[in-house]
Image (cartoon, rainbow, N blue to C red; front, side, top):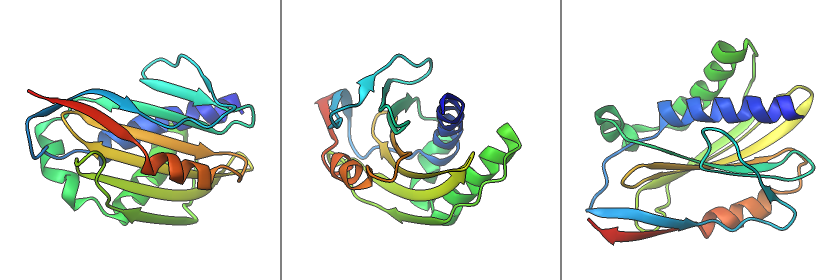
Length: 173
């Protein structure tokens, strides 16, 4: 299970760097954030990850924050479900020589704290385990990505509620 978690984290970083971005519509700077973390998830240090929480069943929540580039600014509104699906599938293949087929996926666009954001939900099998993910990508002063991974099949409703309650604290620059 640890190999799967490490694989998902590394792939998540690839996903973030290739699929998120966009220009903020204002001068706000994020000074903090609030994510509802369900009971039973323990915060753990993970290199390259801003926040990482894991449950004993292998389910996890992680948050990455990356600086934006000029290319990111031009791409946010053009993201499609097909692009995200291809990014994940190609990421597994190129980084780990694993063929993964996304079984179901969907893309919605709902702002988070008045910043543009999208929510990508998908499921796939990895190492004999069916995983469901909810990825929330927020285009603020930086790109904030929160990835919820359900390894047990019992967390997605809780993760959806958590994602709806994400709050960014800001101040004017």
